[in-house]
Image 1 (spheres, rainbow, N blue to C red):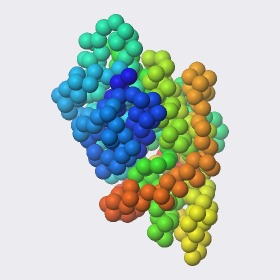
Image 2 (cartoon, one colour; image 1 turned 120 degrees about the vertical axis):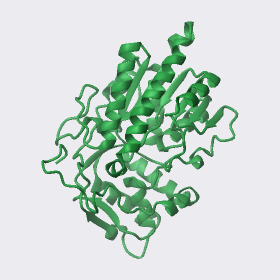
Image 3 (cartoon, one colour; image 1 turned 180 degrees about the horizontal axis):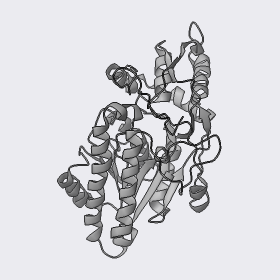
Image 4 (cartoon, one colour; image 1 turned 180 degrees about the vertical axis):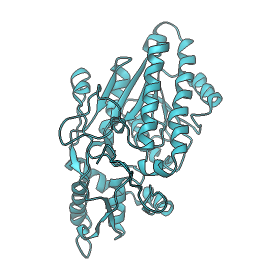
Length: 361
């Protein structure tokens, strides 16, 4: 089985590549242009495996993408390459539009050209998996879950760009017949996550005795999914998902942001005690613009139709995650030198407050 993965040096992508190569024994070609969030060190366990290949390619470069596909001749394309950090999208939306929308268009067209030339079983078995986020759905109230039929209502430039790419993927299936499957996941966490995101930022700031910033009062709720559970889900969706279908992937682990931070502090107090409790470092800061109040995924479709279930609950997953960061300073040290946890997503020096309430308020 030959699998082409885009964005395989990123957080979720590298977990997926490790799963495909180490657990499944597949041949994998990883296309990644190695932006700030792409880290070859995340791929060290597979780097010397004979079935693994890497090509530093920007997915917006159609000629390079075509050449890579023609040479590798994949059975499946798993498209994860994307700009993904909400705060960065607020002050630098252009990269998100270019990569997430234009890049997805290029990948769909390249896949369509390749698929059109396939015959027989190769053509029937080919799949294009477009990997997306639950943020396209906007904000939930206190009750309910995001289902595959939930209307889109993105709040940030990031989620809007991903919503647009989802629509492109579905349109390429409906218009051209390209066998596309779409997945939308909840918040991922685990090893090898760039330290701008909440969980690794909290862990590393705590280890350095720095403030642990929490937006607003930390009441925003997210459904947390351990990244290795997500990797298994993506492999399964690509293998058994029905073209034209969407599959939501969630961990059924809703937590308020403040409770996530407090849980990390509890784990660190036990595993790496400091002179004072890590809870003392918690600092409430002005909220993010357009901050969605709650996300929660209904994963019933993938659970019942494909037989997937998360292995890790939040408590087991966060223990593994904290321990991984404690054990892998060589991985995160160079990244910390480039990004020290400074606040992102500021507009004119302060968080933007819209004149009308955002969907998340």
